[in-house]
Length: 446
Image (cartoon, rainbow, N blue to C red):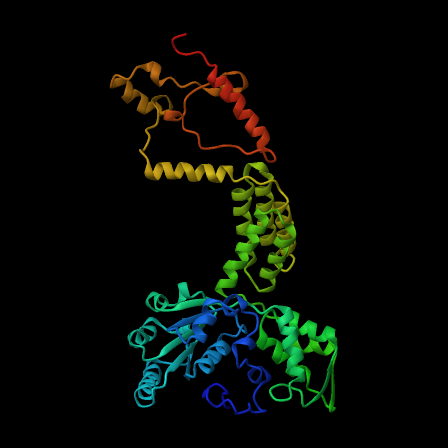
């Protein structure tokens, strides 16, 4: 199978009919690249660097079908460079060195620049990635890597530091819809030589369910054109059969991003958003026990004392999930999600502990006051000359309201500051009352 971009100078060559539609419809210019205006719009850094032919190493990071490979091909075309490609799954050190030797020959004999494109660069181990480094330093090749994984976590630091990283976003539905229409009408690269009519709702369905993946949309369109007759009519039903159920992009990054969106939606009191992210996680096969544990954490961290019942609801949901299993276990998860999202919010207990932990870690370690120590410790202190009055502990339940002003922490530090949401209003009032009693308590001298 030929590759239109293997020789960028062969612009007159037309793609083979046997190529998949997604390959034939690949962009040939920067203006044809879909949905990446944040990096390729007029005046943007990457576009300026490509048009001026002033770049060294690039890493493209984004979900499948967003055009990482296509953009690398377009860059080779635009700059008149040779294009060599490797795959992180299949290639080895010997192949890397062979490509680099070819690049040296073309540079020395013909003055040609070679772009070495490595798809799924995160699949290369450290040794394979290190092979590239000296040749990038000498300018033997221009390196472009593509990955669906966060390069700051999955690509070696030396390679990341020598590269400019650009994140590609899923292509929006409107752009994909326009591309599908263009693919139907284009007689050279698309399906324009066929007699095709497509209902608007059918194309809209393909564009929407492709989930920002251009390759998925074009593959589904091509499948929808399979017909025993010369005249092809793509209806909504045919479109639904062609794309079927979408597979959600849910690798390591999707896992962390989605649970982050889920918890932040609960914290932001948006039950609709929280339910959507919950549905996405369940659809993608996330461990429901992981979700229930995060609900328990959120109940204490984000709702806390504003509604202590939230923790009980989250724990009950966790136990209910264990008891009934899936798929019915999703129901108590939804119950807890909505309860937490619509609860009053307070992180006062969480923030108070964080401040106290910082004091313990960075400040002077405080000793327990004599009157709060055990009886054994008090006996030792008394034998050492500590006055008994300083060691007298007042038992709270012996006094009205089970409260007696007494010092429990040296230097009178304050960590917990109650908010004014939910039940914390009452806690705040109670604390203020106790503080007033403490302030008006008789001194030892009186």
